[in-house]
Length: 259
Image (tube, rainbow, N blue to C red):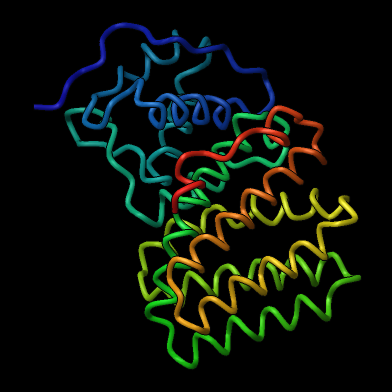
């Protein structure tokens, strides 16, 4: 039996501009944070309107947005319920919440690189084990593009991101690609910030070369370790560019130390 939410939850009255979008955003945040659980029946429109201090049409539009995002469903004659989003909708939700401005917060940078290490270290290990000739050619091609783009930030970022996606593709595990894809926008933005570091290009070429060599030679442990070292260096350079000294000089995580 789905639960029914009766107690008010903590919300803020939105400003006049984009009322329904702001209401939808607050409700989305509550759902994603688990404060409104999957299966919960939302309060009636009138109750929500009172909590948000807006009109019922605003609430109606906000709920329509949540339905389009795959976060709620309306049962005729019963009400609106929170649902678990499918993969496509979840990717869209993640992209909305990975704002570039938030990279200035140390915990966001830490979370981004924890997620990258979880996905990309395993991808590098599997790529070293499973890569076929076509996969290796893709990885080598992206590395060559990086070398040619050493003086072109936009081309470098495209080639760099392409290299990482090629490694994930060579893992032949589609779930790893599904996990990494929603992060690409934030990763590209972090690359743009790190470009300020004059040593970033040289360090990046060496690191990607080491990853490529390990995969080509089918050395799983070496590929995983090379990816860990690259991501740790990348995080430190980003933290330095954003003036986040606690992360720039932090110790390696236990997972990073033992891939």
